Image (cartoon, rainbow, N blue to C red; front, top):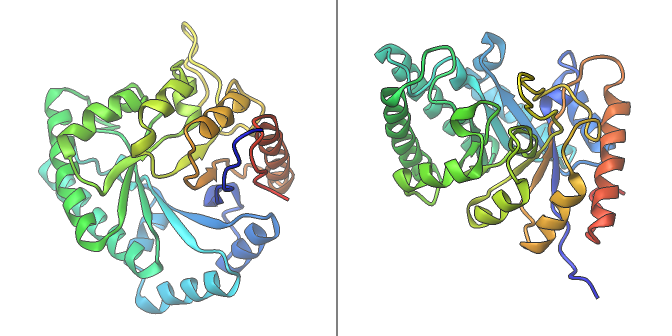
Length: 292
């Protein structure tokens, strides 16, 4: 007899759907495709960062749509800090990082979002050093306290750059933050792409994982820098069979999110193909299928 686990909830990353869809069409599409929740994107573009300034009429209109289609806005991918990082040498940039963080927490609170995924970069467009690292730690300590006040979870993404590309590195970072509202949001593809043993990493941080991105990548190899986005799940180097066997082993039922990008008119076909491949990995691991 194999262990019977409760099926994880599974969501869709907003960028897996065409950007020109309005919100109602996005909810309809995600519901038709069998997802349990939606992950909204607040990236570094002016258009998406402007969502942090939505008025209450807009916020509650979108919340009512999510309720109408029974598809919660469960999480937020907040990558706007790539442009305005907490580790920046520029004090005005660091202040903007705080403003973005407070606005994101307020928006999450109003929309009912439980988890804000933070980008695990001390800096992105600046040169990194020990000072940028220390400023990032101080920024995370401050951010965690703001999240505690709102009871919104902050979860740092394991990234596509070397700064925070493993859960091992997250565990070291977490000692500096020491907050129950500061946890990990592993991106399976990023960990695999940097040639870490993903299964060992998941076991290491199992008690600190809030949510997981399911994404495929090509591994870094010699002079090849890898590919960390724009792949359909099942086309890269990630061993999803082993991933799901490990999730079963550690009895992990945190929410999962399919992270892909709608690059062309094949976006729906690509999502369905990814779902089928994920279901196969679940079946091989003797776990409940995620999609019917």
